[in-house]
Length: 69
Image (tube, rainbow, N blue to C red; front, side, top):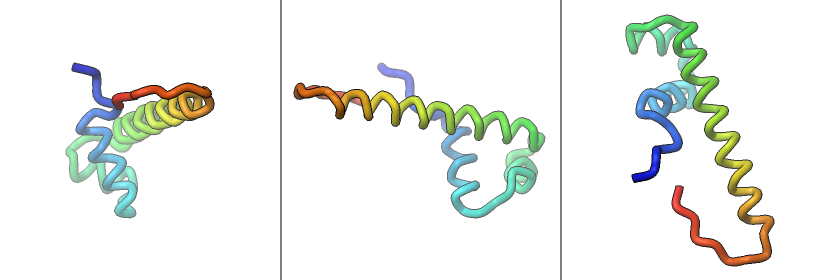
């Protein structure tokens, strides 16, 4: 089975940020540090950037591909 793009923790942090919470508020909810939330968010954003880059490459090709993400 392929590795998921984002971990459950990354998804949670991204959703909380989308909902308008600060890193400190998320850290308090998840009982961790703000710096840990920052690292989780940074890693999630990097994974998303890499996935977008991969998709852009796939879409730029003049062939039909089936891609599972």
